[in-house]
Length: 194
Image (cartoon, rainbow, N blue to C red; front, top):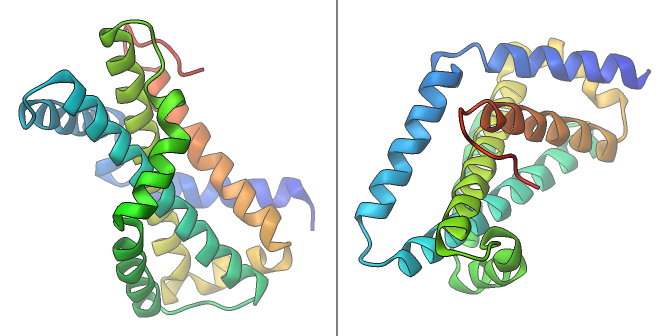
């Protein structure tokens, strides 16, 4: 099967997922901005706020990587896991990615990128954009996989099993990243992440 067909299938699933009300641009971005305001109000200093955002980015990256690994195994083994087995995996994975050592490792890997900037304001802006991006990617991948593993969707998802696991996971992940970038870059007055 061609990459064109895989791309079309992936776009179809992403399009169906993002038709849910929670994915409407206004609702999505307003919701995330509300979370950011709440996070800022819960801390006593700008440094705490930045460190909290970095920790959240690390969590979302680890969580997304874990879901990609699960998806890779599923495609590689040509196995549709049940929604219950996916939920159990997610529950176990959340415990693992909340592990302070795992979070600290990813925080250190991402620190220079997430907290990039000369001024405190620049670092906060960049950290907020990093947070928004990783949250949207994670949440969209979660909804994609929930749709993928739903028993009523198996016939529509079978064509994904005809490709290499690496290609499928990379294609879906690229769509999630592109969607996140489009949403964030459409915010008025927001600079693009680089």
